[in-house]
Length: 77
Image (cartoon, rainbow, N blue to C red; front, side, top):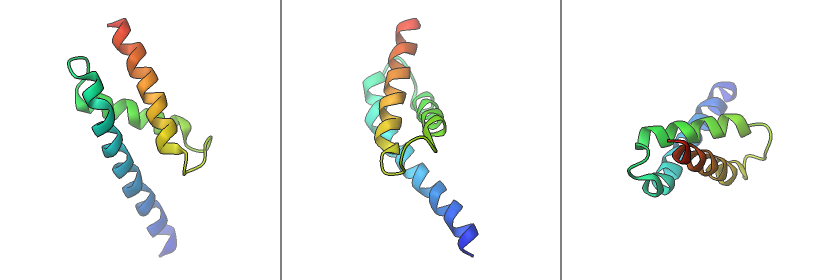
């Protein structure tokens, strides 16, 4: 049961983190990106950072990376 519970818990946590970060970042990019696009950037940042940073640092680092990528993408539009 633990093997099934751990991934399910991790997925639920990732969804909560993503939702919180979308709430934080989407207003900064109103008119540039939709909430779904912002969510995609956050999801890719989480994927790219997973295993490279501690679980505790992942939300903050993902927010920073997604913000950086969104800023660059907005400039290139």
